[in-house]
Length: 229
Length: 401
Image (cartoon, rainbow over all chains, first blue to last red; front, top):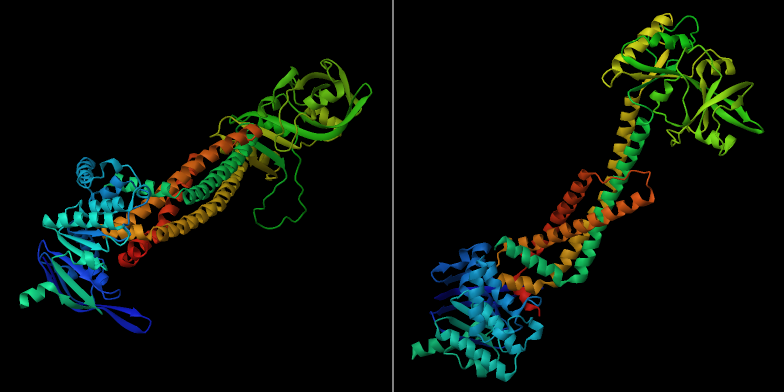
């Protein structure tokens, strides 16, 4: 469960203060499928970074699974990221010198898991994402769709509670974009919270709950609409 | 994170950027190699000098006429001239139990001729004991016979070079050569022996000390070489010599005694300092290599900004990122040090081939220091880039492609 309570994030640009997030409150239940849409600069990526614990709010609370993460130190936040949050990026962010299976293995290595156990998990992840025959390939030998599949496998290998996807299809053609979205939706069906940031209304509209943002504020939240009906 | 995973990750990272890794390795290797080679040259010089001194003889004391130090007290009313050292002094010294061998030396220069050939040669007047005191060896015949120091026999021993120039390939044994205005019969030829302290023993003619004294018309000795009965006996021998000569010279300490150990330890000190200085200079090149490590690691951090952002997003703590980059710096410096040692050992091996007379030896402490210092530089200069990596803001790091 995620609860954001009057979150503010202010950036200093020159002499001006830019409110990337302006008094944002949000409650997300386990297993929700949410899309966040809005023009660029509306604060959707900032919101995602706050939820992903990559950034700290200037004001407000963020409670993840009954833990107030704003109270946590850097090291503890890193541990929360490691175990509860998975990231999928527009530019994949695979380590170029590592093979597909080594990229997937990376979170397990950071967690200090034993090599035998790692091997097992990576093997089943490769099978789940139909990457077994690509295991020994480096990112530059993979297609865009394959790369994003490797990235999703990496994001989910630690069995997180939340998967945060920032424009996951932004660098893919229609077909592989659709495939990636379907994979993410399948993960969501298993109970993982899926939060999707996108420009693309076709993709955004697939989500159960659609949030649109403008100028650092939530303009529209379909869940809120339903409850107010 | 497990230690072997840190190691593996860092090795993969450094092999991923071959050119920069290559540059760092070269810098460290040169630093380490220069420390090791230069110290081994210094150490070689020290050993060279030491061996030269010990070729002078063992447990040696050198007695010189005249006093080189003042002891204070009122200045003498009458001018005081040191008394000469004489053969009688030598005979008196010979009675001491701590003295094993004693050999008086008179030195002069005189023309030596055989048939039509003539050369000006340094003439050393001495006794049979010189043979043992100076560790001489013969290539032909025998050395001067032992006997009364005061009897000047007409015998001589030729240095190797003198023999070659006067007799070429003929045997000089039993031949009569003219030295100054006297004739001497050749009993032996010295074996070829390198220079020792600038005194070329192959370019001399040795004759009995009494003969030399009458040849040069002098009663005094140039110096007296004394071999103590053991190393421990050297101080006692020194005392005994001083006492005996004082008694014989009307209570005056008018001689100077140089012990070989004193000279040796002085040179040892000087050359040790020299070695350390040279090593210090070489260590600067290691420090330079360290700065290069820092530079290249900083470049690595900015090259891999997105990677660092990514592993932060995957749950790497600051400490883990610190460790990853430090491990990389240390792996680079260890590998560099290892390469440097290989270069140093081949270099020293080559030097030994080119200059077989000069003892070049790699002292183990130099190896230890070179490796230690390179490790330390890797660690010290790796900390700053590693901290910078750990402090990177993941949002900004990931916003780059």
